[in-house]
Image (tube, rainbow, N blue to C red; front, side, top):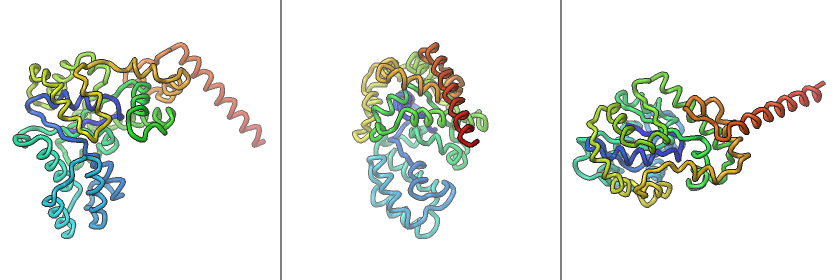
Length: 307
């Protein structure tokens, strides 16, 4: 199964909680399909070009932090030389190697969890490759998610809150679209519900995934989270805290009032569809009214210029 969503929405917490369950095992983020698009520049259903394979392997090594061994590299190169290396074959080699390296023996009998938030934009490709695959999408209040993404992800501080809010809205649209096409294959989880009652949410997810739920196993969360926070995944440092708490209030303190209103204005109807009410509601209404007046004034100005 695949955990997807907007970065910094609680996907690492969700991954660690699910990985406590006896029938599930997880692995480092592969970033496979996002890397495939960037390096190979084609859909996931085509063969990997021989000239793109070395760059792709290096990119995967950099993303996962665990290098593919010589045996795997030789096998991939042979498959590529014989025009038999598909994206599906390559992905399964990566997953197998990561499971062997991080989960050890006994992982083949369990269902594996792949958590890369950016794969939210590749769910249709993944669904085609794996007709039985299931998806869990996690969302978080757009302001808290945008602040956390800007403050914690390497290289993200250069993005404006406008850009981050637009990406949050785009993520929600993709999730909503996929849920309408494959309602039985996707379950949506809100970060706020997860931290409020993680046992109930994990139980619900186990029912969705058709695996046994073990409430006692949740006590292993701190140890499981520590094992899943790999040294190169610096953005996962927060899950080492054994406390499971709502960090939204901390994030809301780190944004100006103007930026908060701006993010909520851009998030718009997607925010309401995901069950979120705006913070500072009355001010938000005034801000939205002011933006509408500004837009009308801009349109009138452009018409006067044309005439």
